[in-house]
Amino acid sequence: MNDSLEKETQRRPRPGAGLLLLLGSCLPILGGVLIAPVLPRIAGHFAGSANTALLVPIVLTLPALMIALFSPFAGWFADRLGRKRLLILAMAVYGICGPLPLILDDLTTILLSRAGLGLAEAAIMTCCTTLIGDYYEGQARARLLAWQTIATSLSAATFFMVGGMLGEHGWRTPFSVYFIGLLFVPLMYLTLWEPMQSKFRQESTKRVTGNSRFPWRSLSVICLLTTVATLGFFIIPVQTGFLLGHIGIDSPKSTGMAIGISHAAVFAGALSFRWLSRFGPGLLLSAAFLVSGVGLILLATAADYPSVVIAVLINGLGCGLMLPTVVNWALSSLSFEHRGRGTGVFNASFFGGQFASPLLIMALISVFGERSEAVGAVGWALLLAAVFSLIAPRLAGLRLFDPIQAKGDITLH
Image (cartoon, rainbow, N blue to C red):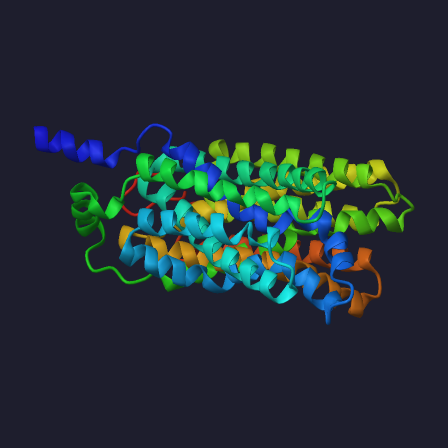
């Protein structure tokens, strides 16, 4: 009896573990938004350097590219070295590499520090999401993944404002926020536990999965949909300001309010996932892509500010439902021994879509000639994705109305 109780205790996450993993999931968002408001000042500071126009934007986007490229490797290491060990190491690297531009005065070395930051972020995002999958099951997991979408979305808006306020005191100041990674090291060391050390989970995994193969079939379908989802998701924060400028609204405040409304809608859409998850990933993604696509089409045709607000609101509702659906579907398709690597592959598709979203719009502008038409084309593509989502479960080995069910977990009803 005592042995059974010990095993059950090992299985349960400690108080505060879920909150800590949610907060940890927000840190990789810093790389993409914290320094965005000070990019013009960075460009001005290095105006005399070679290739400034090329290198300064890369300072912003390099961490996302590193996450996309190296998340699969981070997942591989997480499965072999342990999730907690890799996460704590990554937090330390994050807290060291992130603030380095405070003392660096060369674009090349700053880019190297940003590359190190991106590597750490790849491991942080992969390990935090993997541990959520390890610690929680069923509705508890679905609820926490919905909150992960909410937390990362709200943190993006918050970090953007924080970066702008700190940037008033110089372009280097926002980089000091990255020291927060060092605060997470002792907190995670004391709060988190290593699932691979739990006899209960190891024995449970053997019973459920045996010598299971890596689920490339289902994960490929999920990652394809995830990339399409993130290509559309990052249209609003990146393109809204430009589209407002095209209709004569050149106000950072108006742009910020529109993006803030979009984030609020993402919040509402993510909350709805908890109650809608019973309908299965195919139907949920079809509805999410449909709503999100309609929002982008309305945004492309908006002629005044109220129309823009309505468009981003509709798009945000779809995106809010979309993101927890794909991440929960991905985690639920992975057995314990494959969860780290699978989560890494998933994160690569997610951040790859983030990195490619503005590049896609630039390519479409060269085809259609107008930014609004490019955004509208993405909206129509999301409508096609809504149709594809209806057959995606079959391609992944499920039926359309099958709810998300984790390997060895309870059905998400």
